[in-house]
Image (cartoon, rainbow, N blue to C red; front, side, top):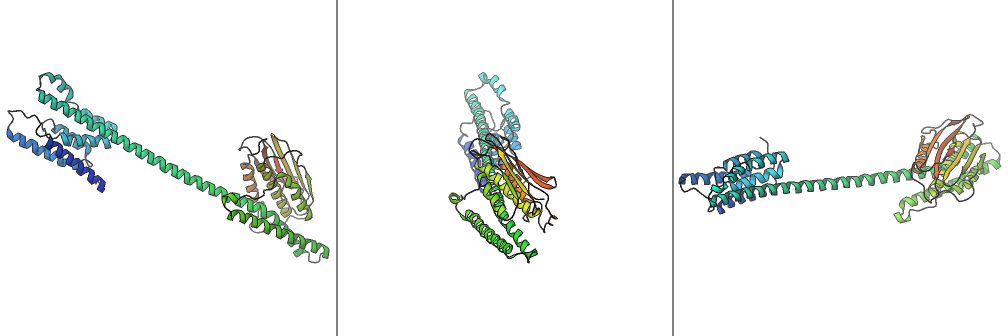
Length: 408
């Protein structure tokens, strides 16, 4: 037997319907037409059956269909089952599928055609009582269908609200993840360039302690300046993280800052040739910053994996067309350094995360990036759109090319 778990609210509803059925039977007792030739004993039996029907209302949650069928069939002989019958058909309409409700309604109104056929021959009181009965049954079924539709609507709205809440949580989590990834890329791009200079000159001092005093002094000066710049950049990034949403703005590099970036790399002894950027208005900030970061990472990788190799940086493009940046390094003059533990082609001990981050930057700007060996050196290729508006287009719009060479 299926066990029904009723809440206090369910018990209150069942008791209320039980009282409704009992009160309806008591109130309508005087208006029930009883044939004059009927044995008074049958009236007592009828009342007992009505009382049992009222008590059976408490079983409506366990056997709603069976209860409705029993009281409908018994109601053809018993006159005090109208109240329980209304409760039973209401329960079926409110809790059971449409097909089951239709079958119960068909059973309830099966006597109606016969009644209408002999309506003219029935006494007025019996005809009025029968019409009232069918009207009450129709009202009970209609009210049950209305309640069922309302419950379904509420459940649908609740489900949609839960889905909307879950969607909001997913969007918030995705926004947090994208923010963390953006911070990681920014930290890598900003600090990786400076720290690679420190590593290069510190290694030179370690492996060439007998170098002339002037070279040692110059290397120490570069180390000092790079350390100061790295600390400044680190303070700026940390300041952005600590600032409020309205304060999280810091100067971002643009395509025009490539000359300064190349000059800094040349000051450390790098052989770098720069062609471009093109004259005229620059690309949107997102495109220019992406191109700058790509070149910055490429120079860092070339300095780490191909020390002493010549690097060529070429930047071309035009508005409403494509931005082309090519950074290519020749093979290193000596044996390539063996990457340390945790280092990969990405350089800076990043396990290749530098180039992965650049590829993601290019994709977010609407372009694409690839990397691989070329003519004994290394070349990383990507493309970026150069729209005429002040913001970058969505991925897949426009066209452009950014080619970058990094490590040997």
